[in-house]
Image (cartoon, rainbow, N blue to C red; front, top):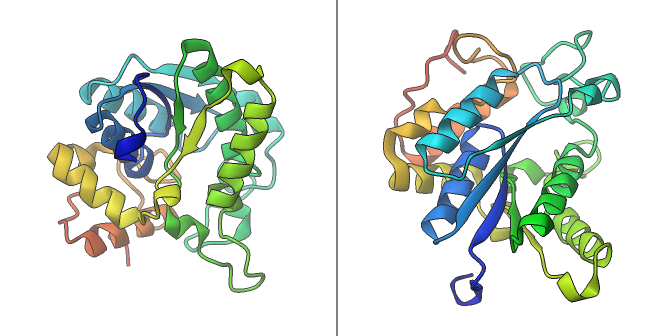
Length: 238
């Protein structure tokens, strides 16, 4: 991407406070961009991530984050582990962990913001591990993390605005063919131990639960990146 960096140096980053979205945003900062974070409260059980994202954005020198309360979506996003109190958070991946087109909702809002402030890029933290095929259907584990989805949405959003002002691009680690451990490793190389302040857990305990799929993926990424995992877990991930 180095040869395509425009004069415009603003990006809008969808941030959750996790190592993927936070790390990827910081990677873009080191590429010379001003990062304008958007943090969403969508009624998630892991509400702690909102505070973590705000704290990290300030520590990493991003522009002041905007915290968006769309918690009304909790009433619409039923039947999913992350927002429905009647659905248990599982220890392994099951399709109920997917919040339907959550990233589409976030990215549409982020693109509207980007057009308003004159930003060229909108980014989020989806990576290649998110789109591994499901064993039962062969579909991506998280469909709205795929580059195919990203490019299709990018085209639609540019068609939906004035032709003279089109040109916003949507980017993610997956679009750069990066896996979770690669984002983590690069983030660590650039920012050091601040990576341990990120939040991955699907719950909001004092420490990471160590049992949910996200905690397990976090531990796996540290191992694959060759970085010691100093995260505090209630139960050590297996």
